Structures are given as structure tokens and as C-alpha cells.
Image 1: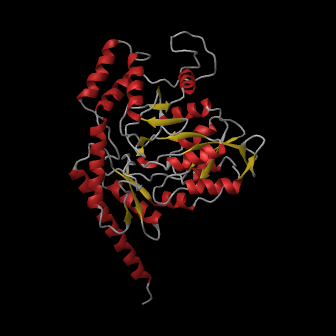
Image 2: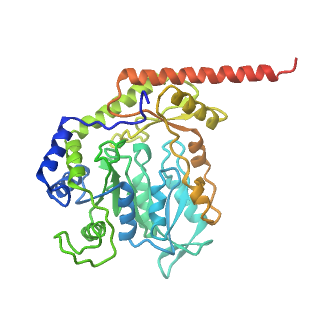
Image 3: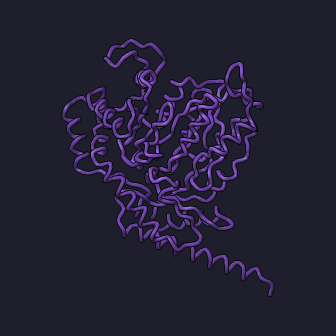
Length: 408
């Protein structure tokens, strides 16, 4: 690709930190893991951080540590990467999807309430919500801060408290985002971040769980290390666990990125502003907003720059843009295909799900453009010029088709 979809921002500091670990001879289970955890917890304002091998493994450990299992349901968004639903499936629980807000593309508190009122009954003896169709108990809410936009966590938290539901925040795309002056990921029982190379900071692969609950933190530390009862290196295993550890090499890279995090976030915001300026006068596209709330204390963090086709056949225009950009060597991707329409999910013979019109509309219209903190103004202009050119080509092709179809 001439312009890739994403690119990590790696400098001399990252190379230096990783080289030190290589020369130390202690590549894993060393001091940099706890150092990275302490730094990360301090950055987001959480008491505990548990570094793990990926955002997916972090979601899985949270699901297991909070006791999700067969007979339980987790209410989440279908407009997300599949890991948001898979973490429940790993434990035998069932994801249930509420529709999203058409502006923020996040799980809508209004839709959550409507779904609960329509699908669930309150069991006063067990003090839980039971799905009238499936008989399963709703045990948790899993909001996803999609594309770095913060969910309405005050309203979601109110619902959780009202019905005794745990909250797991999927903040894998939202490091640096804030709701009401507070970092996302710190509102629920646990929050999860991820550090794949396209994220705001990277550890190459990796993730982290944040929580204020000391017991939950200790349990997740044990589960990530094959169920050992402590971190002392003994081989005493007290529970079924996993190899979800993160190495010192990864944490060295993460520490160097945390040193630069404000600069990295600012650079991504700069690229987003360039895109918004260059694409401002294209009526066929809806552009992402810098902030989708009225509160000055709430702000998004730029994970990707996603435009939406705003025409009568959005999928057709989106797919034409995607094909045209790729022919020009410009990376792009349809973000996100709805989880409930994925082949593997439809094959599970799940019960009929409520309609999700806003989710499906977004899935048909959204296109992620090349985005990273390293993009230059010239790169952004090249992408935007290509978009304008492709849209003109689409209009010309349709005009030609209409003229050909017209009666003589």
C-alpha cells in the first residue's frame, strides 16, 4: 500500500527501551510488567492495572472473574469488533444486543432500557432480570467506546445500579477518552484497553484490565498466569487459568509509548482535523465529530477516522470508495460489520434477536480511512483527492447508466 490503513509510531526511545530488555536477559516475568501496570493505572486513574496478552484476553478474564457463565446474558453492542461478544461466548454466556445511537454509534442507554422493558422480567425473589424468551439471567452490561467516542457512562451506570448488573467497559479503542472529566474504563467493575499497532499506543500485541477492586485484580493476575496463587514463581495452581501474560519486551515498548502519550494523542487529533477540513464540502459523506457530547469535560480519543456514506444506497457508495481507494494503493476498511450478522454468529442457531436498524445502517455505511499519528498533510490530501475523484466517477457512471436506460 502507498498509504497504509494504519502504522505504529515507533521512535528511538522505543528501540532503546526494548534493547535494554534484550540485553538484560530477562524477557518475561520481569520488573517492567509491574512498572508498566503502575504507570498505566496512574494515567487512567485506576487503583489496579493487570497487563495481559491482548484486549481479547482482557475481556475474557473479566468475564470469567465476574462469574459469567451458562444461563447468563451480557447486554452489549453488535457494532463492534467480534471480541466484545466472544468474551461472553468463551464462558458459555450469551451476548444480547441493544441498538446504537445513530450519532455516536455507541450503545444507547435509551435502547438498553427499551430492550430490558420488552424482553426481561424482574424476579424479586432472586433480585435479577430474567429473559422472558430464553429464561436466562441478565448479569452484565458491556458498553463499547466505539472509535474512541465515550459512551454515556452516567446513564449506563444508573441502569446497572437499578438492576444489579456488573459493568465491563470495552475501552480498547478509547485510551485518552474522557466522560465527565473521568477516563473511560474506570466507571464499571472493570475496564479493558488494547495495544495492537493501530491503537493510540502500542505494545505490538497486548492489553490491560483496570479496576478499583483488589479482589478482582488479584483474581485476574492469577488467571492470566495459569491459575497460580501468587506471582512468586511457585508452581502451585489453585484454579484453572490461562497463559495470558504480557512480556517485559512488550511492556518496555508500552512504557516508551506512555512517555509520549500526550504527543501521540495530539498528533492523531491533528490528522483528524486535517481530514475534516479536506472533506468538509462533500455532501455524500457524514464526517465524525471531534466531540459528540455537550460537556466540555468529555472528549473522544481518535482511534480511527471513519466516514459514513450519506446517500440512498450507502453500501454501494461505501464499497465503490473502498474498491477505488485500494486500486490506488490506499488502505481502507469497512468498520464494523455487525456481529449479529457475522456467519459464525448466525450459525449458532440463536433465538430471534430484536431488530437493530441503527446498527445495520452504520455497518452498511461506515468506511475507515488511513489513519495514524505519522500521517502527513500530503498523505491526507492524497486520500481526500482520491475520494473526491471516486465519487465523481460514481456519479458519472450512474448518469451514463440512466441515459442508457432511458427510452429513445
